Image (cartoon, rainbow, N blue to C red; front, side, top):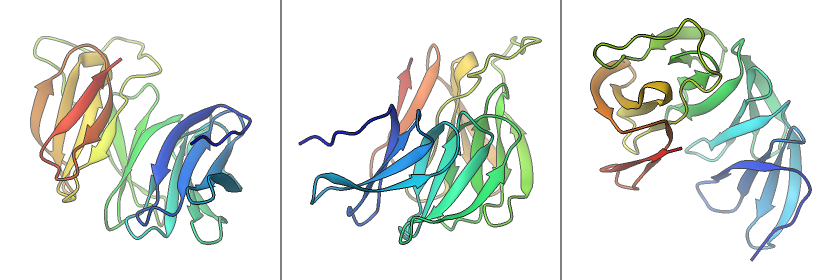
Length: 207
């Protein structure tokens, strides 16, 4: 089946109970909530300029939206669809990953070769993590807009997988301490991370 709507859709997230499908509408600054039983858009939430990546908390109560056209992560209540707060990062927000206990949010930003760790409740930046470079390489004086793209937490909540898009590698970090445990060369421009439900395998797309 299909759900039709106006605007440019970008990313999608599904509530843990399967009762809502959320789609970021890049061109409208909105997130559409789709009821898969009714097969229809049942609500819309204004989140800010250029919503991109989206993640639903494990308890299904909270939705996090990164703004690639803005510089915030917008957080809204899944029951009321009311915006709870905005977390400022000072740069365009790329992929995001929310810790299972929601005590940390990991965020990739435009023109930054690494990721930022923040407290999603207070918005306080806790850590800036520069990703490793392949041996013998160095960063250019001017970084491209899409420096890194792809960030996910394993189902057991123990590891963060981060793409180093401009260097062709993936970093695996033990969390919450954010300790690098492995780097894996994956080829040109890794752009996304998808995990199997058991967390044993990660699939990295090369754009």
